[in-house]
Image (cartoon, each protein chain N blue to C red):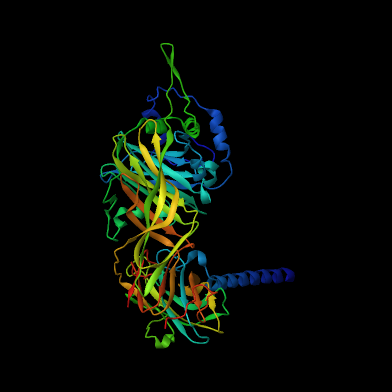
Length: 435
Length: 188
């Protein structure tokens, strides 16, 4: 197993790295040369000591049965870096680590927060992680954003807990255990998924691409150097009949932007005697779905990316309405797999659209006759089709912080109710009605 | 020999004193790192602003969910306002089982509010109904707008003391006050 400063590579399966080396030994004809200088440069920023925490963990199944599989965790560049890329520019990636599942299908990859190069760390040290999971000549991709806490890597979508990714090739599902699509809702607040599977789409299971084969077979230092380089220059060579053959490393390049894709931010549910005001300010995180188009042209979703809003907006006098933001997305194309990822890119505009919302009546209620009642933050509901990215709609979840509020101004007797038994204070969603 | 005995006695007394101190500290000091009492779900802040409130008049506010993260039961010993404590004081409190009818916010004494309960919490966060309802009576000392940044709930469980910070931002407003956001007068 390769070991890099700042990284602990977990391989629950015995000799996972060796197994991968054997399995893919001939794919590139062994024609791999280490680009040592690039690797050294990339890793030098990661020498600061700290503790490694699990940045990727989970289980790989096939119709519910644990399987031996290979997993690679990759970090995408941060927002600032991505915004500097022109169409056609290669996107450098930082290979965090690899793992092979154990007999129970479990995998784990750890990293020290400071070990990830600076260009791959965003606000608060967050890292956009992509998992490439290979099993039985097939692959699944899944993305999420990990944020370093004092004792863990946490994800926004599961209220500060580490990502626990469940992948099932037979059922074509991939999701985070704490954010099961079974709990997602549609625009009317009704269930929009079953365990592991959203109602509208399934995870794309693709044939094993050359890209993933390279990710699994190339020695880690070489792989890191290749993927960190924005250049597409070949990194290895061999000779056949006097001709130099080069295995060109796979890479991802930035492509078309899609501006102003609508995202349903939240449902503001009130009535004439308790109208709502919605605030959305700097620092508000939104966890938005990533679209994935297979080489065959079929669209699905492959996880999420959390972006932070750098703008503010407010709207008062709302009764029953969906508040919409507009988000910019961008396509990223893999040179080998010919797949497209449509990923959240930046915020276009906030609270720019309001549409009428169905008003469910929740049961756990407190009665008020006057005053204002403000809910500051909390993990919002995941809307199965919260963001329309064009060919499909993917999930959207806003994690509120102190600068994001919904406030009801009570002018007549009102019942303020929560979607959960503990009432509006700690429920994911709240509504106000006459009472 | 005499000096040795004296030294031994002093050492034993010191050890005994240290042990007694440690025992007392263990029994009395709040242990936030092993908090048995919690709020269900995300302990996100929330705000309540009541208009046209009077000084030295009781206001009862409910709907504050608490639950047990560990242990069999906890007894709430005290509830205090945090932030500007001299502005608003907690004068009474009670815990009752969660129900669909939570207490809102009224200008009424807790003992007259029809809320029946005690100080014991035995509802686990992880099991239905997921917690209990804390209802608190407060009053402000002087006229004007008064605020708190939260409540500090101290409790006992299994011989230990603990504390829970409840992120309730409360404003007891004097009247309509254009300079103080969230302090509106009741409509006529």
